[in-house]
Length: 184
Image 1: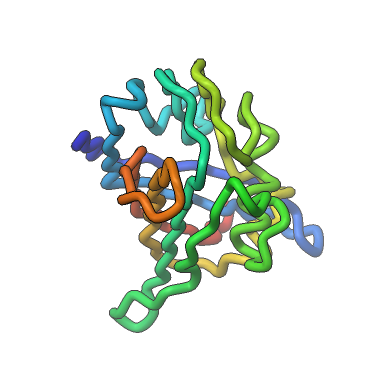
Image 2 (image 1 turned 45 degrees about the horizontal axis):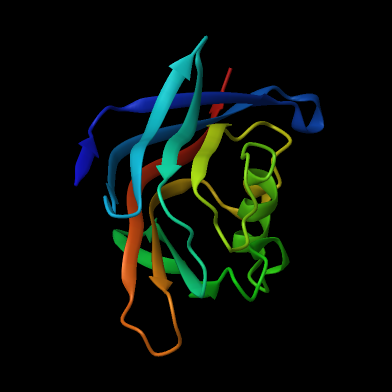
């Protein structure tokens, strides 16, 4: 398990009703684990010119097909307790995440396609998989779906090579983040 315990900030500018405000995102407590039999690389948060982003640079060593179940789990802190917003299993060999029935999953998938060099659907062939500088900007539809506040997000991927086989963990990551408006 890798832990990145840096505190990160992201300032986004938009002009609703001609008033200038910033949506600020703070990332912390990034943890991830990659199945070394399948892949190696890094998942990270980076900063460049006061713009913070999320990224991954992973080398997949062998073909992954059959069923790949992605489980996003997003929780929002409300009145001192975390409440689940998203917790679904999505078989990326059967359903394109961009077509998910869940609006948050669908929007995240659509947004992420701007930053990746691979298909969100399986099969996943050996090679280098990149998530280049995923960030939220003032035009992001996610800012309309996700209210200000504190969140916990976890993403797990399990591979089922054949029907009925035991799951094989491919990767997991978790990150805490806070989204809020700050006047400028």
